[in-house]
Amino acid sequence: MSDYPEPIHHDDLALETAKPRLKKPPFYRVLLLNDDYTTMEFVIDVLTLVFHHSEEKAAQIMMHVHQKGAGICGIFTREIAETKVEQVLRYAQERKHPLQCTMEPDSDDGDE
Ligand code: TYC
Image 1 (spheres, helix red, strand yellow):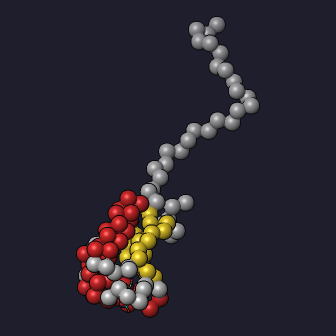
Image 2 (image 1 turned 180 degrees about the horizontal axis):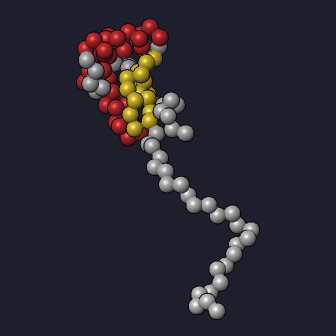
């Protein structure tokens, strides 16, 4: 006779070992919206100061927003995206520009 108790069989339970998966953090796009009053120079300043784009890239993004109505300034994790939106809105308010900035989940971030 064995020294060990009989294993308990849970015949009605389907137990599976969890696969160890590290979930990637979700990413968010920060978007600038067009308006008729904010100056092009100010938008370029925002894109260089807050998003660290070169003058050339900033001018390109600004023109895209001006022509299409909205454009992506960058893609970040949630807290960084929230901070960037706050910085843009505060800077615009301080300079009395109606510039609007928002964020949305980046649907192509490769997360299943
Ligand atoms: N449409 C503005 C103008 O003609 C320029 C502008 C570009 C404003 C991008 C906002 O997010 C913006 N002065």
